[in-house]
Length: 421
Image (spheres, rainbow, N blue to C red):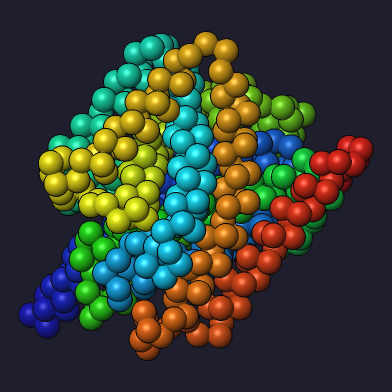
């Protein structure tokens, strides 16, 4: 009886944790989208295991940044864009939201492009997959509630297991992978610096902070239950970085070793895996890509609609009806339609759009982090829940490193291309 009671107690705690899972796990996992998967695949193909070490400090920074947003949403009951507008004014907020909108639109185009290329590996035309995908994600958000949408997103998170399996099927050199994960190697050429900025920018993207905080607010997380919500953030961050690790490892073990350094998309990486790691690795990689792109194609427009509408003081939220938040749903619909339609246009430079959007993530992130740090350290807003010294140190170091890398990338773009490392 005592054992049964203990098991019931453990089961109850697990059920309670699952009930609070959502914003953190969803936000971090959807960040492994088409642009992210392509960035990690290209990193593995071009640099092998040598840049795996970046994922270690990125994981720490991701946990700290995501926890800050989750905490602000819990304590204030307001989204990040809403707080920025209240504290810094409408003009600053409008300019920031336009930058977020432009960057996220490029990211959304990348998601539908990734969906198209992934399903083309299964013989499905993009003129079928993209319209159907766009209609599905639009229907899910417009006609769903927060709880139903969250459940659908959590189920999608499970399919990211395809990437760790692909990584093992690639039979990597685990010794070299471990060495690359703990011994920093820094490339000083333009391509290498852009890759580092892209990895940080795609792993800790600006849109994530707006979406996470808005989701916590809409989930109505209470301060008394915040410890469980924080665990959700940590778990999500770890899951996202583990997936990124295995994508890099899979491509390092196959594409890099075979000298396949140039890939045009994540789907090309999946196709190239077949003769090197087997058909199952290609199928799993492509399936993971299709799932990730459809997942992100739902959330990126949603995150954009959240941030822009909150920043402009308009009603926003999946739990609201169309008549209660017409601007929110209209913007969501427009982003889905424009980004999906762009993929169907012949001759559009999709690869450039994907790469530029990832780099813009890295450039815009320090700006968003500065706003976040100022808000989370304001006792008038956060009371006793302000940051401690350790948190502020991690965030400011992350911000300074990103600014330095971005500046170095701009400077090196005017210099002759070096041999790299």
